[in-house]
Each structure stands twice: as C-alpha cells, then as structure tokens.
Image (cartoon, rainbow, N blue to C red):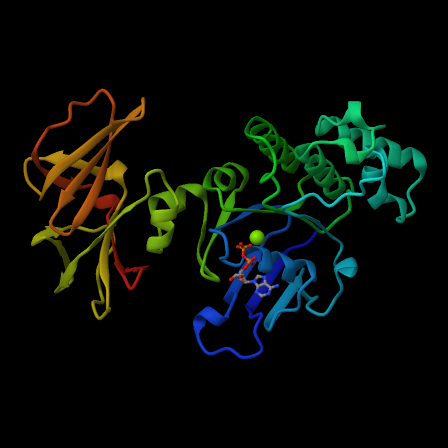
Length: 354
Ligand code: ADP
Ligand code: MG
C-alpha cells in the first residue's frame, strides 16, 4: 500500500509545445493518501488516461515527479511499481478458461495452488463468475469479459494501488450499478488505495470519498462530493456536476459588489479583486427562488421530473434554471428571481473570487 504524490507534473505528446493546448497535462500536484477511495472525473480528452499511465509507469512524464510513500518512482517500470490497472476495454486471454485468466496474475508470483484456488474462487464469487469458471473466455459477452478484466486486477492482494480506467463503459446498465456497489464494498473490505476514472459524475460521486475534477489537462478542484456541489471553485465544476448544472451568468463587478441586469447580488465570498477579463455569477438551480423583488425574468418552460420541477427562465443577461419541489405552485409570465446568498459565488476568469 502506498501514498501517491504527483509533483509539478506536466505531459505533452508533442516534441515542442507552443501553447497550453499542446499539453495533455499541466501543473498537476496532488496527494492521494494510503487506503483512500478516489475518483478522477472529467470529460473525454481531459487527460485522465494520460495521468493513470504516468502513475502506473506506462508513460514517462515530460516534467515533474511521481512518488510512492515519498520515494521517487518516476523512472521505475510498471512491474517495479506493483500496481493493478484495469483498462476501459477488456484485456484477457481468449483461449484460456475464465479460471486460468483469473489465476494468471498470481501464477508467476510464487503462490501455492491452494492459495491461488482460494483467491480465484473468492473473486469469481464476488463478480458472479463462479458458474463460468471452466468456460473459455472467448465465448463470453463483452461485459463478461470486462468482469474477468476486473477480476484480474482485483485478484492480487498485495498491490500498492488499484486503478480503474472507465471500467464500466462496456457493461450493461443494470450490472453497472451492481458492480459499482461491489467495488465500493470491496474498498471498504480491503482498504487499498483505489483510483476510479470516469466521465460520469454519478459513478464518481458514489464511489469516492474524494473526487478530483479535471478540465483541459488541469485539476480544477479536489473535494468531497458535497464540497463540489456546494462550493465549486471553477465554473467548469459548477456546470459539470449537478443535474441540471450550475447557472453561470455574466455580471458586472464594482467596488466589491456584483450585479446582474443592474440588480445587486450578494455573494457568499467577499469580492476583493475585480481586474478580470470575464466576471460571472454562479448559482445552482436548487438555490434560486421566485420572489417579490430581484432579477426580472420571464418563464420559458416548466418540466416536471416527478420529484422536482425544472423551470427555464430568461433574464436580460441569459437563461436561469430554477429547481423547485414538484408540489410547489409555479408563477407564470413575468417573475423576479432571488438567489440564496450562501450558495452564490462570483467567478473571475472562471475561478472563484474569494
Ligand atoms: P481522457 O482519458 O480523459 O479521455 P487522454 O489522457 O486519453 O484523455 O487524452 C488527453 C489528450 O491527449 C487528448 O487531447 C488526446 O487526444 C491526447 N492523447 C492521448 N493519447 C495520445 C497519444 N498516444 N498520442 C498523442 N496524443 C494523445
Ligand atoms: Mg481515457
């Protein structure tokens, strides 16, 4: 088991870099504690797989260091790092049986047959593969194969870290839910550092105690699911997490106060700086309400999701979504909107102002 540290890490697949977009990863600094459950969350192309491959040693970073328990492992091979990595698409031996596939990672490591048998059966049971142990892997469906891949990653009990790279992409929706809770359960049981990579906020938020949100090669925020919801440090986090995401509206900042459409908006954090090229207000739909005064807006559409109503409104500066309990009466036509100060933030060039 290991604590993982990434220190001033940057990576580019190009020989020469002229602009930020030539870097797949930029200035990554993070500390992952031994035994933690972490998620790496971000859209396709933001650099998640690149980061995992650098941690496992499949890729050498252009700049910076990787440390395990404060020891520099940047130049160590994947084998020396002793990590289990589970890839997005199944990596298995088609001609072997399911049993042989699961036993394979243990074979070269000097375990007795009895020990191997016990581990294989335990993992097969957990992944509901017991009935197929004697079948050839080639005959299995895509999600059957991915379960073997997961099993191969989980079967070794002495690895430093287990990393999952969008492992449920090919799994059908029902089984997805089952496997996700199993992985969580497994983490609680074996207490090993686990890193779960996904572009799906539900997967990240249910699996992890700490979520690292990535955007265009940078870490924009690390926090608990609640922190990411309640206080997004970057407009991308506000917009990417939550359903619907945060409302982001252009605002004017003068003498430490923000205004939208000429209406002053109170924010949670003090606005000390205003020399930005872009200033915005972020407020989640959960914290907007209809009021007697506030920002004048028009109701465009009301959608009922069962538990909630999502109300699309339009003010001069843009669209604002309101989330309201489905039992609540919704006014019609012209309305005023007010924001709950506790959850209202000002952003300068996309980063929270505080
Ligand atoms: P993610 O896993 O979040 O989808 P990746 O780490 O795969 O993101 O990719 C990050 C960026 O690096 C993307 O712009 C991608 O096109 C680029 N990239 C990834 N792998 C390679 C490669 N082998 N060669 C060149 N560019 C790559
Ligand atoms: Mg990827």
